[in-house]
Amino acid sequence: MAELPSDGGAPLQPRYFPAKNGFRFGFFTLPPATKTRSERIVTATALEEMQEKLPGMMDVLEPDHPGMHMTDTVDFDVVISGEVYLELDDGAEVLLKAGDCVIQNGTRHAWRNRSAEKCVIAVTLVGAERKP
Image (tube, rainbow, N blue to C red; front, side, top):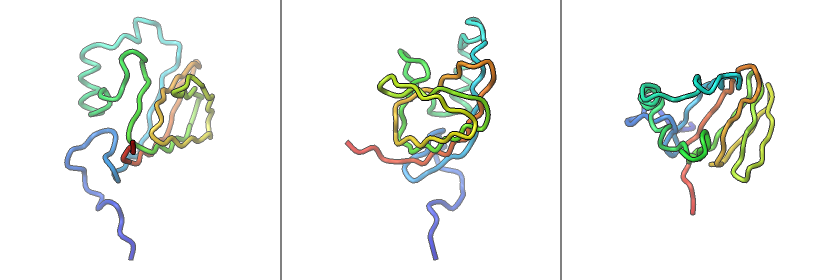
């Protein structure tokens, strides 16, 4: 009989990005690029809400390169609707459209929605241990 990596119970210290051998499945929506500069300004209240609802997210976001982040996870991403540019560590960008899939292995990256439509992405994150 196979043993599963989890009994399905909530983790002791829930974080958005799972610890080694942990996992998370969910969806996230990137708003269209048509927002004005004033609509994009992040308030202290918004930051508090992000920390409450997505604990640990703020810890991985790079302040000097908005949206860029790197985590100790293997990410399985599927674009459900819309389109998005995946910006990679070397500055390369890949346009992904509905139905496209990407697997990232601890990659430094950012998501950029430059379209006038929202983009919905399904993601499965599997916690990993980064090797030197």
